[in-house]
Image 1 (cartoon, rainbow, N blue to C red):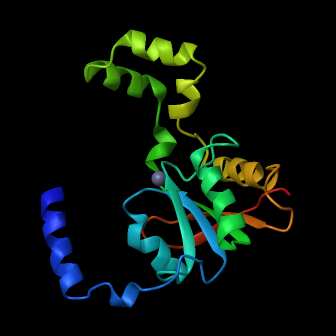
Image 2 (cartoon, rainbow, N blue to C red):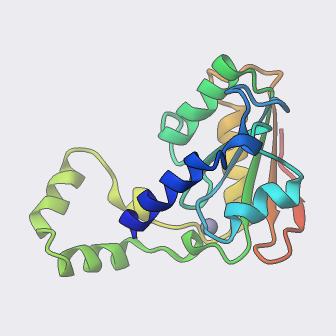
Length: 183
Ligand code: ZN
């Protein structure tokens, strides 16, 4: 698959397919969106929000969540705020999210079946990374959105004037539902 992509890329560049996408690194709408990596959202999310290339910073992971105050998603948001002029953040979860049903027990068994040694998992646990927390999904999507919004809003490095709001987008229709989040 990757070889085919590399081949396609050559013709894309040669035919100047990039021209409609030219923009700067600064998000024109001063907006960052934290969302899920789900493939249904790849084009649907920006289309349903009316966003084009250059409008917003998209930060994506499994579930569209901040799992710890200094994780990779939070780091990207901090960069977006201080380096790229972002002043509004949307946390956008979605319906039928795969991360909703993730269980560490499943990952544990799958990893063992793929050749990861049980003692490797034990060692990681003993080194202080809680694999259960790291790989466990959320049970309640609105609650998960509220939790991530709260972590961002209360973050010691996030200025108080940054707007943070939470949403769930329908994975088929693109309809956006705002989740009421306590401030
Ligand atoms: Zn998802």
